[in-house]
Length: 142
Image (cartoon, rainbow, N blue to C red; front, side):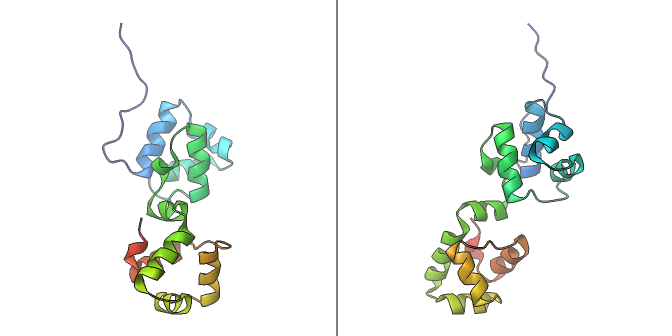
């Protein structure tokens, strides 16, 4: 018996982009089919697979559900931070430094009101702000 598989083997570099492409092909879905099932245009999926755009956190969760895989296979460092959950990680790092919210926010160059909403879980930091936080507090990286 001879079996022929139409998809490549598990990628050697297991980036979110490579894993997305591998599992999409393994599931037998076109970029259009996957895109339509999560409500984006096919070009967006292609951009994710070519690493031109980072996979958005909520999009990674939606695609993982469709592909029937673990969410973390499609997570980059920002998505891992968001999934940790981010507010607990911020609190942990802040307490490790022995800082109150005001001092922690000031050192990171962000407003106290925004930071307290993040730590309280009512708002989420953006990818850009996450990168800024990493500069000041590298321990935030999961």
